[in-house]
Each structure stands twice: as structure tokens, then as C-alpha cells.
Length: 42
Image (cartoon, rainbow, N blue to C red):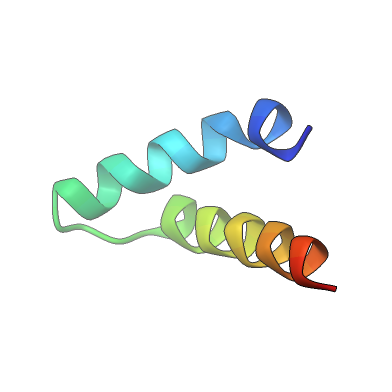
């Protein structure tokens, strides 16, 4: 579910990393990834 709902954040965050211009999309993508990994681990 997270990958489906969070896909726009993850895609735009990845684009900003590729273009070497981190911005708010990068922060939201990292937060989404962190929350997903935390929910899988616990």
C-alpha cells in the first residue's frame, strides 16, 4: 500500500537526487521510506 500511495513522493524524490538538487520531495520520500522500513521491522 505504501508503494502505491507513496509512489509520487518516491519518484519525485529520486528525480531530485539524480539531478543533485535535494528539496522537499526528497525529504518526503525519505520519510515515507523510513516509515515503511520501520513498519516492516517492527
